[in-house]
Length: 161
Image (cartoon, rainbow, N blue to C red):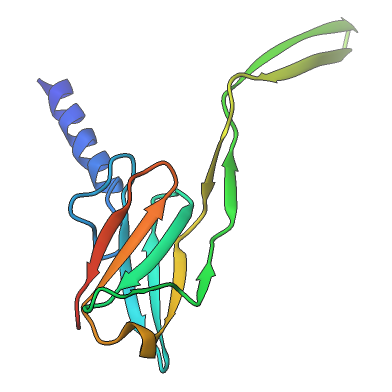
């Protein structure tokens, strides 16, 4: 019974870690991704931050209330990060000891080798930031249509504040 309680607590804790980081989310989430977005109104631009769940952003546009699509002026992609795949290591070593009364000498040596098994994974390290011309997107609400690598397109509604 105690093991079941520990497993339940671990499951709940890990589920909390898998959530998205920004307040606006697509409904439904596309399979294979956890997407979210937030925005900030600047003087003459709309800044939209998109959490792609580590996937590369392939396309983004805002659909205005009159169904006109507006592409971003600037896209700030986060840097790529590489997570190496598993590796298999081999090693061997030896040692010797010689000593007499009151003292001794020890010598050791070893050789090791690591061989990659499988391939690693490339992902983006951070959120993608989009900038739209405020006079082109019009007033909120906006529909942010995004497509990230290896998922289906998603729409996130950005409501007025």
